Length: 259
Image (tube, rainbow, N blue to C red; front, side, top):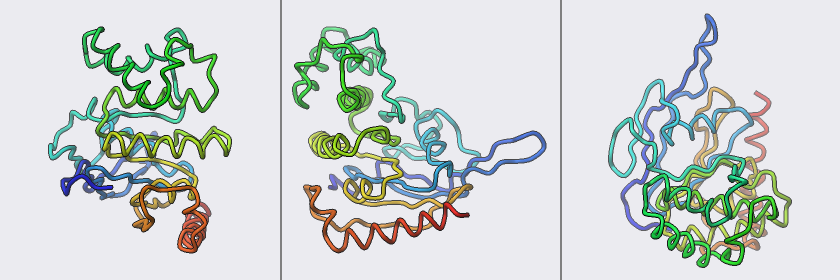
């Protein structure tokens, strides 16, 4: 889905290295890629290749060793708050109710409490969680906690979401349900999404485009435009083109993992 030709995110020549005693540990080789407005873009790659490091840099948690990152056409080092960043674990605050957790992003942005409460209720109602507003995280299933964490991420920034393998710990049926829920969320908000996963089928199901990263130090070794209809459905994974693409990507990842 595209809402315009302007790039939401432009990454150019980004590298990352760390000093480890007397030696230098290279994590990212020069990486270039784009997420356009309204696109759902996914990154896949071997474990430990540097995907989360790249996300931390885009989110403003870390800085690149070289290269530049442009968000909404603005080139600068201050990126914190310009995306909604959801790490692998939901990290909901156990002493806050569902609505209070969703309000957290609004609190950080200093939205007045009455207005924040109204916005949180609207999000919960819009995406089917209103009945759980006064519940605490400990009473929710894993899938429900991920839904709440996603809405909290949206409350930080609804236009650009960085999702770092949010469904990795869930069972297969819960993941399928959340795939459809996330796609509805994305299309309703007209958001841009950059998503990390180890699951090739998940990447194919969700994405407009997939970037495949090499083993560390990571570089992009393949770019795949996913030519499947929208709205996307689970049965699209049974199409011959999807099966062929899945086999090709798994073979490529296994090759990179071996390296």
